[in-house]
Image (cartoon, one colour):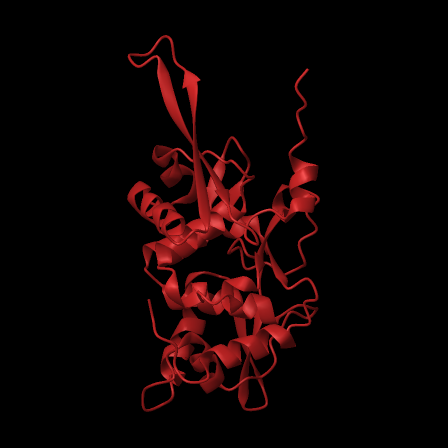
Length: 261
């Protein structure tokens, strides 16, 4: 948990309002979390950020992805001090400029999520594809595997609980992972490293953090395992609490209603 610095929340809300996103949601390709197909999943750039414990890179990526909502996908030329204020690092002698500069460099060179440029004397940053391939960014259509996306609601930043500040990195990562999955999803801990590149312990900690703050519901069901030592096995089903996760409209389309005979 980090206490807000003066002006941090006001700057973030001005950025959200300036993004011209009328849905008040940000579309992010699933490939940021996981690429490949169901049989051959490939962990996305998120796992590199988690392994590096690079909270600031994730925070800055999400802020930039939110601000940039139209072609040519380049941010307006904001002062480094303003980005630092939104990250909560505008506290040292250079107003956080060095910290922000290093974070942009990692997003560019280490994670392949943005490119850096100049507009006059100020830096500007252009989105690249969320899969870290360094391909030009396009808006995700949702029409094929590479264009499927999840939505991060503005409440991530605007709720009284200020999730962007109060959730630890593991919780943030599992919030994004969970956002790509349908309500009632099952996530076997031993498969998480293969599927998402995140350790089982980090995933379990992140899911627990989400449950502890009321963002994730858990229900337990049972499946028969007659050929195993234990004849009934517990199955953990997770569902994100609105406004996170699938919206009601999309949920009804994805999960057909089953009527008992």
